[in-house]
Length: 108
Image 1: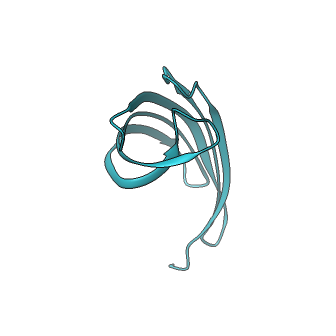
Image 2: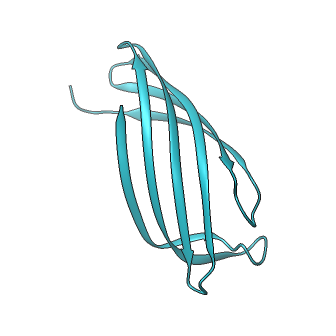
Image 3: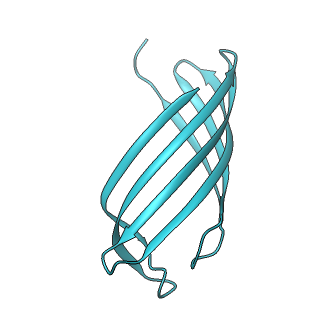
């Protein structure tokens, strides 16, 4: 189990007042991740509480849940998949996101 506390200052985020625009905001993210598996593969479940503070005083606080996994392809190369959904998002509505990345380590 892993925990994380992250502060982002001046992060470009979607404007809750006008769709399609981005504005600068500060963001606090508090998350925890439960991870399990073996050397060739692992899976994880993550929950995060995100608190966005926009310059005009607006706030957007919401929860994000995600599942994912890593597969060891060989010689320091990993394939990672993640799928997540925001919950209880006020003005912007809930969104689903996903990502697929290849990670390469040059260390033995």
